[in-house]
Image (cartoon, rainbow, N blue to C red; front, top):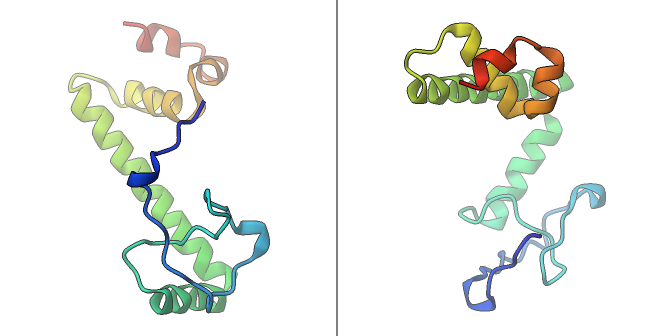
Length: 119
């Protein structure tokens, strides 16, 4: 069960009345107001960022998301290699799969993972 922060530790998001949100994408916080994208950006700069995203083509957005996904995977693998310096490339890939898929699905997809991951 997720615990909520005490009232004194909550930071209220800045007012963003000028920003148009897709209602399907808005999450509400405890106050029922939309959660902002970034607490260190002004509502004006946030509105501009959202507008720039809306103007991007599907191909542009796909390229950005693909690049971010590759970066996250590379960072994850770097962390795995740092924590397991003697691991082979295969073991690192299986450890990444276990992080992304969970152990049960990893073992289902890669039966040999049991030997490598249960050392």
